[in-house]
Image 1: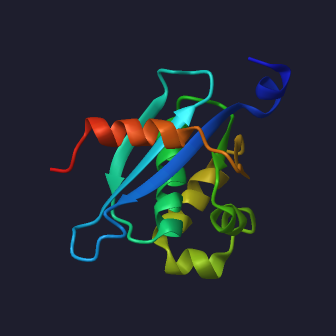
Image 2: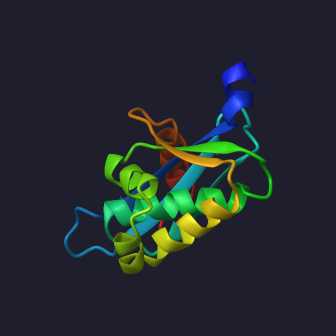
Length: 139
């Protein structure tokens, strides 16, 4: 672990994918995933109920926080969706009332001060999520 990682905690990359999003008549399937940088054993993916990109990204962040809050004392969730990171950073209560997943995410983030959410342009969780989807075809 580098000095920067130990100062702010491990980086947790998240991603979301809505499979079948561009197919009009096909059922949609939304998968979210996280990968902890430098800790190969700490990664996971799951299916969630979300039809929009922002909602799916919120679910990805919430999933990572929920699974890791008791395993890591400090960590930084890295997300490539600027609007989602912005709404989390401002803790927009109006938006949180409309989106229960945001409200839950903010509550968990508040109860554990060592959790931060940051923006990243290039996301390594894309590769893991695509691999996971290849290994877990639609049911």
